[in-house]
Length: 407
Image (cartoon, rainbow, N blue to C red; front, side, top):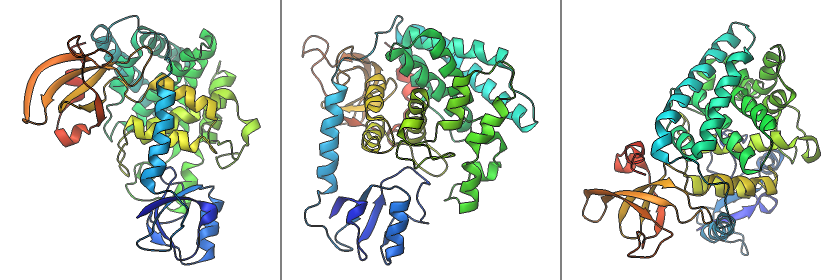
């Protein structure tokens, strides 16, 4: 039986099933092992790991600890309650109207990040007169229909992750700022910070950046240098603002002091850097990487909600959850009827009942005529179905983008 315990409850003889933290953030070569020494327990606590999953069938038990299923169900209920609250401003353009423009913006922005990285390797300053127009294009697309660009950016391959991650952080941060009614200039500066936040990774060797296995301590130390390296590169760029510099330097800081490069505490991290930290982690854990499989939006939000007790600002984490939603545009879902569909439009007041384009019947294993279902409506009024869970596009060998065109 799997149980969720606090790291303060760990004892020698317990079997660790999962160290509930971000990837590459614990001092062990594997995720599953028997605790054999007190030193191992001290290492877990020193790494600021709070929640741990133990396997009671393979090691010592904790009688009063909840099972993993109970812990996840409790968190899921809390996340769902947050997600049912009213969301941000509705879109000004339909998804189908915005998709082509968003595709152009995605390509343009990814190309710019690639150029910035190449220039940084050569010791060249970042040219902000090239960056600002791209951020403006991202912002305009988000204002017209945030689901189009954010939906396209959910689709990444392992080869272009580094560049598209920066574009995703930019777009998500702009959307986050807009959902919080932040002013236009602050939003623009935050977008620049999001687009350039990983500039320092240009100085990390590719074999370390794209290593499929766990990093050594020396390799992880190289990775942890990238916020300061990026800050050093950007501060030499004429006209760079304080906000992009702050986001670049501090997007890996955590409010419990467990982050890097300065181990800042809760009161020392700016609001925008805290927002960037949430956005950065969300995009990273929902993306496929060479060393881990991306998780669904719902699972990622559950993790962020859990980690916000220590690592993130809880109020900002909840606002971000309402901003992106449990079922973002482009998400493949299974409905109660057995049909597969792609989310094409969130509901304005309930993030649990989006519009979905259905196209496949899992019971008969055949494609069906694509149809848009509004899950907020009753049967006979264009609705009458319910989302059961997320589904993996790889499992069904489908490209969600093909079925985002019908809204």
